[in-house]
Image (cartoon, rainbow, N blue to C red; front, top):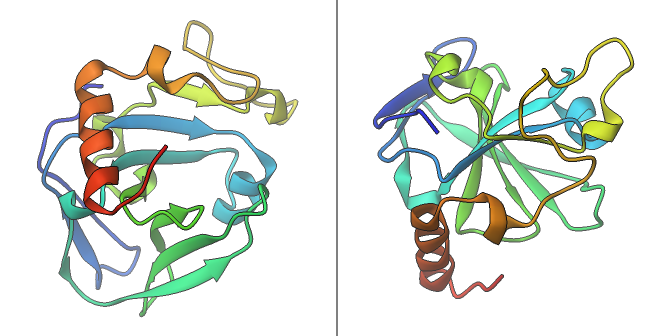
Length: 163
C-alpha cells in the first residue's frame, strides 16, 4: 500500500465529496462478473477501510440496495445528484467500507494490493504481469499486513461483527 491519508474524492458532478482519514486497510482490483456489471468497468477498484475513517464532507448520498452474487446483500452509496457510486457495504457488515478507487481525486494514490477473481477477467484484458493475483479470493491472514488485520479486528469489534 502506498496511499497516505488524507485521501480525498468525490462524485462525477462534484456535489458529493469525501475524505479518508487513514490509509486503506487493503486495496482490491476485483474482476468478478458482479463487480464488472455494477461498476460498468473491466474490474472494480476498491479501497477497504473502516467506516469511521470515511467522512462525507459535502453533498448528500443515498443508500441503494443491490443484489450480491454470494447471496448476501450489498448496499451502494451514491451521490443524490449524479448517482455516482462512492462506496459499498457487503454482506450486511457495517464496519468496513469498500470505497470506489475511481472516485479518488488521484486514483493512482491507491494501487491494488491484489487482483481477485482474475479467472473472470475478460479475454481482451487481464491483470498486469507481476502483480499478486488470485483466481478467486485469498487468505486474508496471509496477505494483509499485520497492522491492517489489527485495524480490521478493532473495527469489527466496535460494530459487534466477527470474521
